[in-house]
Each structure stands twice: as structure tokens, then as C-alpha cells.
Amino acid sequence: MAFQTPELFLGFASPINPKERENTTWKWEENKVRRTSRRRFVIEKRREKERQAAQKRHDPNR
Image (cartoon, rainbow, N blue to C red):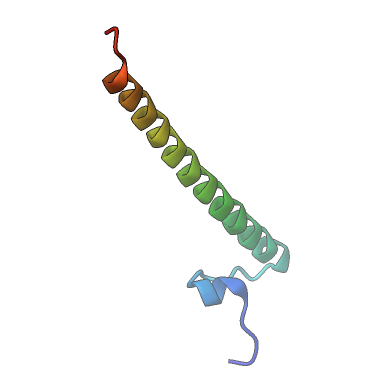
């Protein structure tokens, strides 16, 4: 296999139209970014909840 497209490398079926191929790669990249930022967001939320729980535990006048 002389030349490898990103889709083939990632296990995608490669569309014949090169424009479409660029498009799928771009969408994949965008999704990857969205996924990582979503994970960061979820982790941030969990930390926030833990922080509030800790504050409640240490609150003297509850």
C-alpha cells in the first residue's frame, strides 16, 4: 500500500471524492476535540461537586 489516507489508517472507509475525504477527516478531528473538551468539562463538574460537598462537611453552622 503505497499511500495511506488518514481514514484508511483510522479504519474508515475512504470516500472516492477527495473533497468528501477531507471533510470526514475534518469532522473526525472536530469530534476528537469536542470529546476531549467534554471530558474536561465533566471532570471539572465532578470536582466542583466534591468541593461543595467538602464545604458542607466542614461548615460549622449547618
